[in-house]
Each structure stands twice: as C-alpha cells, then as structure tokens.
Length: 193
Image: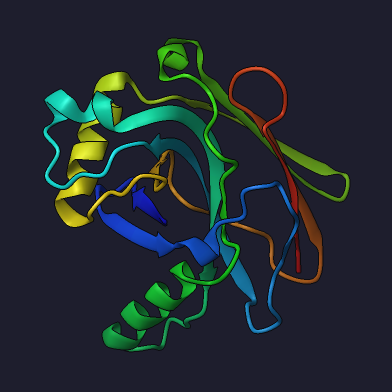
C-alpha cells in the first residue's frame, strides 16, 4: 500500500505505507528534524488496481474521498548541492508518520458538498484555513496522471495537494491540526517538536 501524491506543481511522488498515520495519532518529530513544511490534501481510496488509466474510466478506480495533511521535513540546508538536495528531499518524503491522512470514508457522490476547513494552533495563536475541494474532473485527471507514473493498487491512497506547502514554526513546541471535510472533525492531531 502506498500514498501517491500529486503535488501543486503537477508532479507525482510516492510515499511508502510507513509514512501513513491514519488514526489521528500525534506526530513526534525526530530530534534531527529542525524544520518542517505542511500541505493540505484531498484524498481518494483506490479500489481497483490499474496502470495508464484513462480519465474517462478513472471513476471506476476510487470508492471513497477524504482529506488530510502531509508533512515534509526539511533535512537540507541552502548550501547543499543539487544531488544532495534531491536525495534529502526524497528521504524527508519517506520519514515515518508524515502522511496524516485518515482513511477516506465519504462517498464520492458527495464531492459537491465538500469544503475542507482546517485550523492550526500553536499555544494561544490559531490560524484558520479553508480549501475548495477539487472537481470530479480534476480528481479523474489526477488519478490518470498518477497511474502514468505509479502502478495503482487496491488500498492505495491518492493525495492531491490543495495549496502550496507552508512552513511550521521552528523550535520546541506543539502544534495542533483540526479539520473537517463534511460533518464532524475528521482531522485532530498534534505535531510535537
């Protein structure tokens, strides 16, 4: 099982299942990670294996929708050469428990009702975000593009980044993410530095 990611810049990344934290458990950041970025995502649960899926048939390949947050540890410095930057970015994408995506559980027929609301709290400060959910056409094109790069298997999760990555505050602190896609909070976890 993999987490396949379509980035805002239209690239496809694949994260192993060891990155998946599906039950809103808190994330304890390893001591060697000093900085981290986050990105809101819309997710699809893949229900049928496939490769080179046409957008016309993409709807047959997912059976549930959801939302979540991906974390991107910054393990590099601006002085690193390009090869080192690429390797450290890949290493950061594979860091355990950095895909905070509850198992998608909403029917795809509810896509038109969706709006992803997310709040990020650090101490007494709280930031509120709201993201438009992708259209059915965008979902199907994203799934088709992902299937060009990766073999999609039953149980995989396709995550579509909804916005640019944002930096989490540096230093010793606890950050709380809370969010909802339809009814109730489906996201509620802390990132502890």
